[in-house]
Image: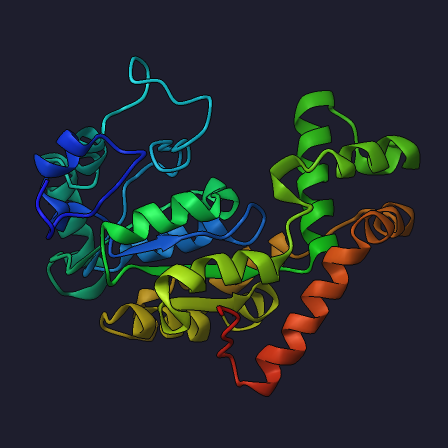
Length: 289
């Protein structure tokens, strides 16, 4: 392997040397679950200058360095890169949609990828994937830890057990929240520092879920500007505010929220401190050493 190629450890060196690294993502969405990721995927995918894969369940990056990874069942690096391009049929469909909605052709300038599991990547994995694109950018949407945990618990108990969260005893809810399902125990400050430490503070976009709900077109425009693509209000779906406000509404009782606040006391304090710093720095925050 020559000096111009990244010295990776978790990805096959042969795969890297034989792959077209220009297909590696220009940006990753690293937001955890229940932060508007589905909405963001839909709206970024609609932009005629942005490519995002249809699925957000690709596990190649998420499984790097984990015991789950197996060369017999997981895609190779080359297969992952092949996943990051349009099929002829999808390219035609996206071109038609871009012409119909925006009066312009679909001509992707940047490649992105996203997975809710990227928020849980270790520092070592973040370091390795940063080697593959020196200009890699990351997008992180922050949401109040209690709101995020309650929204996650609502979905889990409704889907798996068919019950409302209000029917769950506080003790059982506490056990669930302490299980770290979907990374509820993570500290945003550590997540930000991990990514800024490898990409640089200027290459990590920080947005607030509450701001996204209030003014989705504005925040989406800031993300477009961060990514270096055309910024226009028309690239934000007309019903975005209604969709996001629905995500931010909850019928969960005060008891469940109190349990979440007690379990996630450290996370809430960390989040509030970050909000103060973001407000002082007008949306820009550098936590990397």
